[in-house]
Image (cartoon, rainbow, N blue to C red; front, side, top):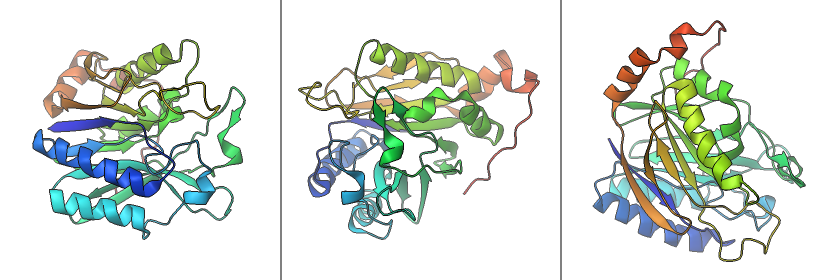
Length: 269
């Protein structure tokens, strides 16, 4: 299965970001991709207040993504903000739309690190989510979730062959290396493909304390090898996913079968 990873810099304007997304969606389709993944906060960057832009999945942002998915004939996964019970603290959501279906996942692990408290602005989710796309089973995660291997093993136990990780990775000393290492490590932990789609590095990374991105989106195979990686700037990355590679990896390195710790898998949607 061919996928596209749309590494870009979202603005604080959801309408402008939809225009940008439409261009990447068409480019992904032209490249033969069946799925295009956008970063966390694609709806509006963390330079804005999430509560000011949050919309329900019935709102214009998700509606336009549905229309694009149906019109272009591709599955779209993109980060947005959706309302919670607390109007000042919406959900950090990845929305997935395809012709005739959709799913959404709310970020479970919030980035309360290095002086930035995401929990001041966002309400945490509590449910892992699986989706079926093109004959493969995908788990959904967002950014800081990649530091928690138990989530990825949870997905693998439920049959996931791939985990998508839209991100807006905070810049700083050694942060790019951490991102690259964590994506590869989670792939090896769970013997799944991990698709890490980050925001491109902003032109002035020191202009905001918010996590705006470091670029270097990457796709790691089930044994942790990098099969595609972007640079720092905007880029459309193309990668091939192979279900049989997951089977082979689990035969070669049966960490899921050999674990001494039990887990309860989530239910697919």
